[in-house]
Image (cartoon, rainbow, N blue to C red; front, side, top):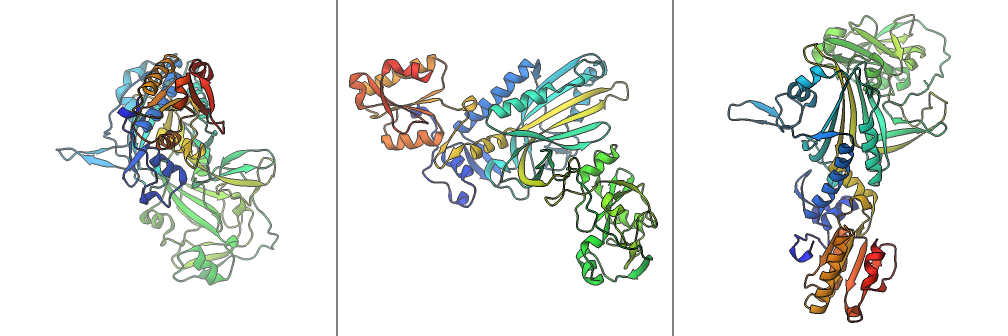
Length: 536
């Protein structure tokens, strides 16, 4: 590629809108990788697309090794999914976010029916839309993303039905791109397993916990912890008390002059037509992931609406409790089961019970239903926990017993990788003030040849000859043949992250050039004949 013919979009300074954002986002703008179209929406410039295509090629090579075929599914979906929607000329509503399982059962129905001993794999690169309220950090949290989607249909009798080579190989690819990738369980039911594919990052908004002793690592919502039990009180008589206009835990704490730890709050969820009541300590947050994992039969649960709460409790929101509640499941966190003389809602508007005790006053299914915190201890070894944040870059989903009208059952494995976010994290993790340190496997250009004087015929001819020789050894090379100041050329090449710089300048009369790689402080003077060997 010749710089004279490229759409070079480097900037000396980042645009004003990015001045308060993270450095990697500003660097991507300055390097000419992306340009902002609207909040959370970006155009990819030629350099950005070159890196994106290199990422795609790595993944494509892996999928071809796994005998996967490429498809292209429609952007519009009849199934309604929360997010962006559009309407056609007949006023029919379509979702721009795809329901891939419905597409599988519709488009590949015949394959699903006849899959017994076989394994089929296919994949696509597409665009997904996310209705993020406050996009930020460039590609790390945006509304439109380049996505890789891979599918694996396994017959229940196939030899590979217990293996996940697609997940393992794609994670290796991401690691080769310079990312420290790991998986976290998100949801486990009888027929559905969801794992998040994540990267540790101080910019992440989700918390990761790790045990300092056994090194168990999980998302805070899924980490199994020891219950904190310190109460040795004598059991007291239960009493119903008037608590007028109390709507929140903080209101109740002030009114009764107690601590949050002395309250057991009851949360109401809906899973289809089933009502689930969950009790956790008043100073804790519920873990929907643990709730779904415990019940194993509900992949989706939602907070109950006001009408459902009133039906279950007979009271307004804010007064739910376990005694007399109309719920299909009453889940009791193990800390609550071991608390003494605590406060609960009375299922009666403006009333609460005090001095309630598990076993005497109510019973339910006991388990760990709370989100872990840094102050907790590991359930496996009682070790201390340390916290960090992470960014999700994809997911791996196993759907069991997928079929057509009950005639066939197969397992469908689905992997999804957010390539836009992967690119953003690579720049975030591999850059310095004015330069991106691209991992070699996705580097847009391995070598830059700079002609010092764009009008010097001798330099131009030598640069052209060298350019052809380097291309012949299958290296990505860019020839900067612009009639521009050499200092400006240096800055552009540095911004673009080219690791090797060759300057065809004043030494060319002696058959010599300046050679500098990223690890050298100063350039060395070498002959033209040495260049190719040095690069290899």
